[in-house]
Image (cartoon, rainbow, N blue to C red; front, side):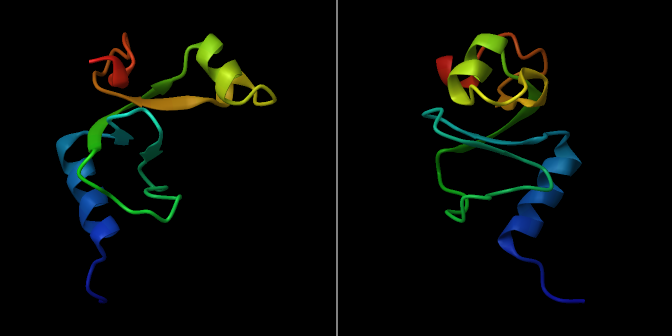
Length: 88
């Protein structure tokens, strides 16, 4: 077996602790399990573990007007997704 990458170790840790991905504290990006760091920038100190949930329709339309809101997602600070993780 090859030695694990940083992404492998982080994904394993997220799964073990019940998280679904990371969000950036400034709200610029988020990534979910199986698709960590698609931007290629990798993790930084501002990446915070969180839970997968749908984007509110208004926010989804703002981010991607052509995307079906049902396919839009975000990573949130709490499991209930009651408030945007960036508003804390």
